[in-house]
Length: 271
Image (cartoon, rainbow, N blue to C red; front, side, top):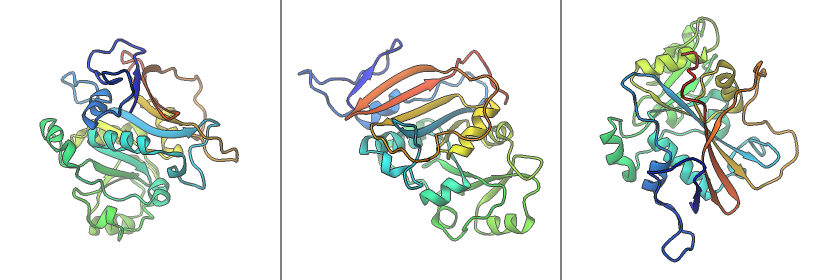
């Protein structure tokens, strides 16, 4: 990571150009400090962060996947954000398309996670109304910590039983078929997970935006043009009034921009 544009007063982000004025790569510890979650204020309120990537012309995917528009630096940020989180939330379609696997323990973050009272890896929480998932995959069959499935009360009992038999923990977060975003966050907080990270996909992120529960967006802008009809980073019905976020930090490497936007912390969303 090459440079930080201090768009707001910065006191804890000391990385930057090297002593000779040339750019240098940020360490993982420096990235972790730059992307640290807000300090808890004594309440068990969840903080929902999204991490997404988009091309210059607004495509969130190419050929159905995000990897072709990513970069090595983007993956370093991706890994850092995962290492800081209690739980990673993903929609079922994203899990299928991106070939999700269990989060892996990383020695570089082990001590920081212990100090923060976290387990060795973040929990992966899959949002699924139908539970039509392949429970033989490693995400369900061999994670370091059990995978969560967030679903509605009307989910098919047979699919719930199959998920639980595979070792997953099913959490009801909606009265009908689908999941209520605010209720899902409360359910996760009730399990002790307050540092939340969602990696989409666009449909799930759109639901969080519409529900007004997104606190932060970490958006990588890829210096690519793809045209076509790929999805944007957030889909679904439009909000009645666009919600304004403030730019908290901006990093750059080889034309990739790593932006971090936060909503006004004085404005609470519906939890």
